[in-house]
Amino acid sequence: MDKGQYYGTGKRKTSTARVFLMPGTGQIVVNQVDIQEYFKNKTQRMVVNQPLILTDTQDKFDIYVNVRGGGYSGQAGAVRLGISRALLVFDPELRRKVKKSGFLTRDPRIKERKKYGQPGARKRFQFSKR
Image (cartoon, rainbow, N blue to C red; front, top):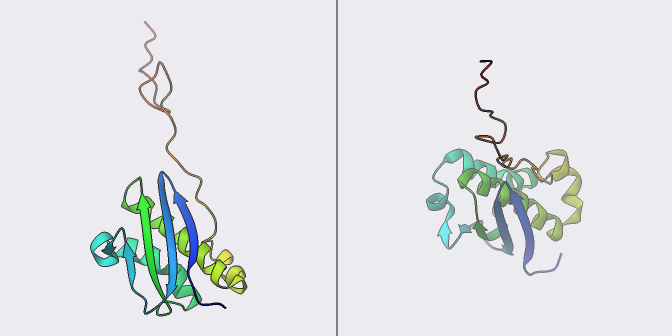
């Protein structure tokens, strides 16, 4: 384990997160703002912290995140994936534990495109028999 910086990229829906782990005290900064300020929802903060709690590394790293696109929920999922990938760069031995919890799986669900001649992706105009 060398001292330095560990990087991971995470994506979810239309959000992309670039995550940098550096040895530190457990501070998490998202887009130059503290995580408490950025993710006001407790559930979203919990999602971001899941890989750190699982690997017992909450107080070992300072985490700096740049995240763009989508809403807060998608961004939280992207940050979680980025942190999980960065932890594997730090210590490949964590892979089995992190993968078993499903934190390395990129959630493929994105918005389906609207189809021409219809009001939405799946919705159809009302059928009229006469």
